[in-house]
Amino acid sequence: MSSAEQAARAERLRGYFDLQLDFASRMAALTELRFAAAVDLYTNLRMRMALALADEESAEDAAQWGRYLAGLADSPTHANRLDWTQAFFAGRPPERLFPGQVRFGCFRFEAPDADGIVRIHFANRDSSDGVGPLATAKIPARMAELTAMFGQLQRLHPEAKTVTGGSWLYNLEAYRRLFPAQYGDSRVEPTPPVRLRGTSSWGQFLDFREQLKPDLCVRFRDNLRRLDPAAPWLAFPFLALRTRAPVEAFYGFYGLDG
Image (cartoon, rainbow, N blue to C red; front, side, top):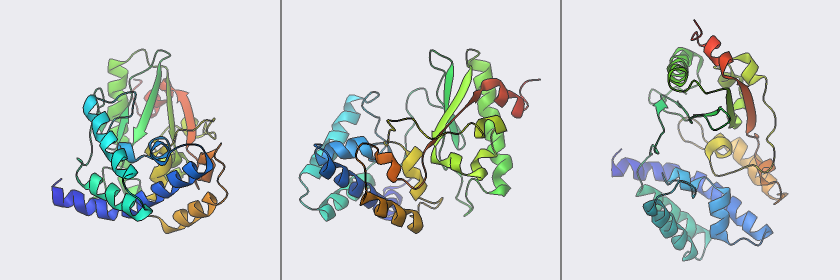
C-alpha cells in the first residue's frame, strides 16, 4: 500500500478514531486514569497502527507508541487529538505479521498453549471486489481457508486439544456457519474483565469497506452516557462472545479426520 493510499485510509477511518478517543476520554473522566493510559487500555489504536502490545513489543514498538501517546499529551483539544491520530496512522504501515503468526486468507491461529488451547482470529482480507468476506457466495473461499488452516494445525500441533475464540462476530449466523455447530452453539457472554484492545469488540463498528455503521455508532454513543467504568464492555452493541469446542470437531467438519 502506497503512502497516498494509507493517507486515504486514515481519512476514511477518522470517524472510527473519533469513536475510540471519545470512549477513552469518557473512561478517563470516570476513573483516575490519565487520558493516554485510557487510550492504551481501552482502544485498539495500538494494534490498528501495527504496533505490538506491551507483552510482545520490541524496543521500536515501544518507542513509536510512546511517540504517539506523547503527541496526544501535547494536543490540547479533542480535535487536535483526532488530527494527530489520523496523521500518525497515515505514517504507519497498513498491517503487520508478528513472529509466529501465519495467515490463511482471512484467518489465523495461535499455537496451542500449555493446555493445548488454540485461539483463532479473523480479519477482513477479501472485499476488493465490493462484496463482504462473509457473503454467501464466499463461503467456499472461507471454508477452503479454514480447511488449510486446520490441516496445518493438525500436522504441526498434535498437542492441540481445544479451539476457542472471542469476537462480536459470533453474534452473526453468517460467521458461525463457517464452523462446526458445536462450536457456534457454545457461545457465551464474556467473563470479566474483558480486554478492549483488539478488534474482537471494536471491529463491529466498521463494515467491510471500512465505513462506519451509523446505527451501531449511535447506540454506542448513547450507551456512553450511562457507561459503567467497572464494566465498559457492556457499552458495545454486540458483546465479544466466547466460543469453545474440541479440536476433533473441526477436523471432522473440514474433512480432515479421514
